[in-house]
Image (tube, rainbow, N blue to C red; front, side, top):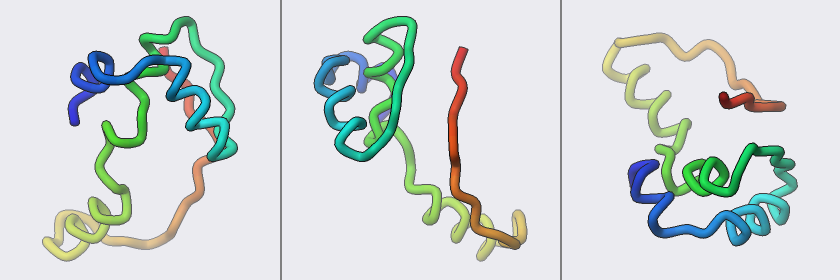
Length: 72
């Protein structure tokens, strides 16, 4: 789903609860910002990496674990 669709469908408090349950800590300027960050609004990174590796667009060399995201 797109970020715009996510903002229409999800309420900020619900997504905050879901992210807390996944041990994700959020500090945001407003709930609209939180709503567009729902996991369903993103493609699975493992699938994206696999596809670009298999098509030769890039070469998979490491697996990283994110420790934070800053969005302005």
